[in-house]
Structure formats: C-alpha cells, structure tokens
Length: 111
Image: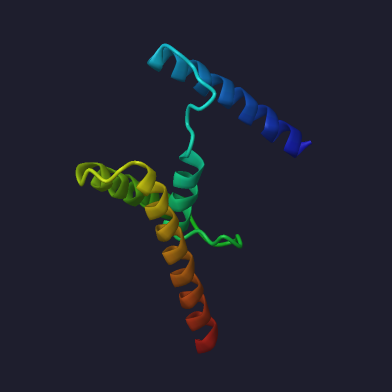
C-alpha cells in the first residue's frame, strides 16, 4: 500500500513538473532532462551518500548538488566541450566512491 501511494505521488509530481517545464520553455521534447540522472547521482555521492545505502543526509546532498553545479559552471566558463562534462562527472563519482570506501575501511580498521 505504501509503495502504491509513493508511486502515485511521484506520478502526480512528474505531471506537475512536466506542465511547469512546458510553460517555461513553451515546448516539450522527450529528451528534456537528459543526463540529469547522472548529475543527481554525482550530487548524492559527492554529498556523502553511500552507493550501498544507509549513509547520508539531506545537507550533504545539497552541498553535493552545489559542488556539481559549481563544477559544471566552471567547465562552461573554461569553454570545455559539453560532452566532456559527462567524463568529468564520471571521474568525480569514481573519486568520491573510492574515497568513501577508503574512509570506511579506515573506520573499520580503528575498531
């Protein structure tokens, strides 16, 4: 029951956001928002959320999203071609995961 209510809420919110996007841009394409999932994942991982789950908070995700926005804007200012942003985000995710794993191992080694 809870899953069904959650899916209903997500569906309603998606419809609302689609309407707002159409009003803002005056058109709609199926490719709108392409690549945002990578930015969202990068923001979560940079913010300290574990890919295995159970670790992370909203403040960290907010700071991660801010860091990803700063990186993306920095790449635009440096006039780096847009397709390289995916490479940079991938490297940021890999670095964040590796550093998280290293810190987790250090934490367990101290116990």
